[in-house]
Image (cartoon, rainbow, N blue to C red; front, side, top):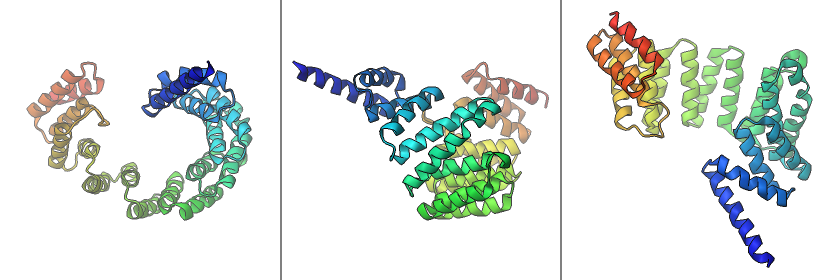
Length: 310
């Protein structure tokens, strides 16, 4: 008599896991919660519910589930990392006085995770951020952040270079940061490495270098979103207009729902580029397409006013 009930429970749990993998969290959550009532110490269920709570930025629930996990398995580095991370995000969401009460627990959990797993990359990134963001009087320390960046260097050279670049950028040593990000591009060459370098160039008022960096990334990765980024830079800084128009045209020709920016924004930047080069009628054509795509597009409405004033 019990056997069909056990099978039914397992089938439901597997369906919840499928929902979770597809990021259908609202459908997965009630199934996991029912399963947890029947199996209150099941670590997989606790972790799934903690991850869903973290995704929803429900830090109190995430803390509750992750705390239960570390109590069940104190030697698991990933559980301590998730618990420490949830505590950190809770601290960010409250006032400074309340946030200070979380600092000791955050440090303890993250440092324990790092000790338990010498190769845990995410923990070291979290510790770098912890020591960078804290004021010195509360334990913040660039030298401690740098030590964890050096540990990353031995685990994953590209993460090490990115971490050292992040520390240098945080401390406004931009030339040093550029060199580290260039090394990350050379060693890893992922879209992230190119984006970090391009973002720093733009932040440091070097849009031409930013555009060239994204162009190199486009040649390597063939990601349609990079066409949009190039067009946006071209419009925003009035550089290489023909190239910007070509890239936005390619972006629209290959557009899919998976792309980061809507068609309306691509039309907006096409209008802006044409306005920049004095082609008023073309600019109006594109801005009207943007407004047809999204009638309450405030930025496009303002841009149309500027175009009409030419």
